[in-house]
Image (cartoon, rainbow, N blue to C red; front, side, top):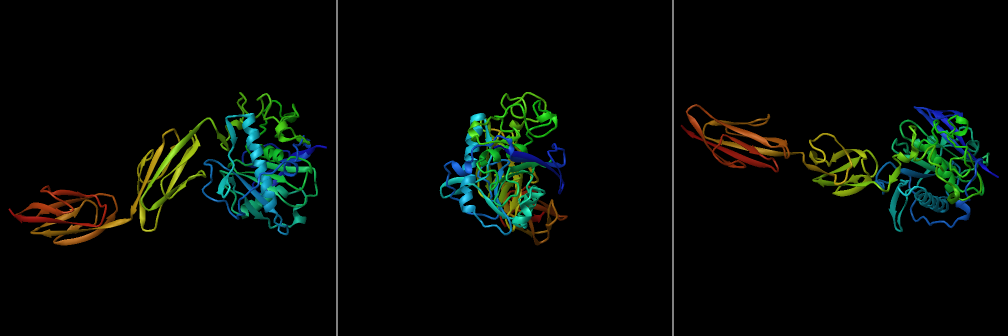
Length: 444
């Protein structure tokens, strides 16, 4: 018996249709059932599992273990469902590892970028548990279920545009031949759902891989073997293709990633090529970004994977564009960027081999005290200091302050002492600490 990998489309907050094509501003959801795609052997039930040693979490751990657009795995249960994460997490981990190995076998230069965290046994899936506000009965029917999964993610704060979410839904389903659904919208946000209690005997790893491909726009409507050229999101020329619209009992290892490379992966056409997806690690093209944090502050990137409170190095797909955000500690400020960025505003860069950035933070301000002997006045180039005979003001740290000594009529400037020295009328104080300067005037 085969199971179906179906399709549903949601526009904004409303699911509009089943089997519709991806349209800008909409979410295209592909359903995986037992009659549309020859399924892969039940990884979850008959393949030796990799033990997951992590701990349940209610939020996405940060920073991600692998830098770049992530694929975050989520365990979802109905409001009245039992929490079986302790058992199912190992299935999810095993499936993720199977998909990784299968993908590298299909394309040695790519693999999905799963969101992992460090646990006692090493790096494993960072799994978040989400309890839906809907009951088992309310979620048993396929109608609207995918939308409810998306809502459950949003209620848990899992709605980042940079992230694809792979959901393993652990609840009863009235339609046991629908194995899963998947889709994405124009922002990049995408959801792939595996219905673990449906499609008995079907490989959950195969279902997850199929639905993930839907989230990265497989199969484009322009693909020559798109089923009946109706932007179905499936290919109909080869049943061994993972994106064939039904799934049977074969293992994931028997499936192919766009055989012939002519529809959705590694093709030479002008339509979307999922091989270029930002959610794949380019194993043959990596670049390291060295980030130095000097002083009290931290730096994060808009794309997950970089959060540094001390100097750190992260590895990205070469050419990855990042916007870095500097956050100063209380009472401090960002003084400047240096290296691949400059100034004290935003830092946007592309990660290329040898890329390095430094963020310099310092205490927000230091106090500068000035005294005058004789008759004259000392003024700062920026507002704050106008001294006769003494004054003080706070200035931003590490922002040099230029002082000018002007003698009164019949007097002349003799010299500086303290933070300034010499007999020139101007002096620049670096403001690297609280300090003082004295200007001496004598009769002409």
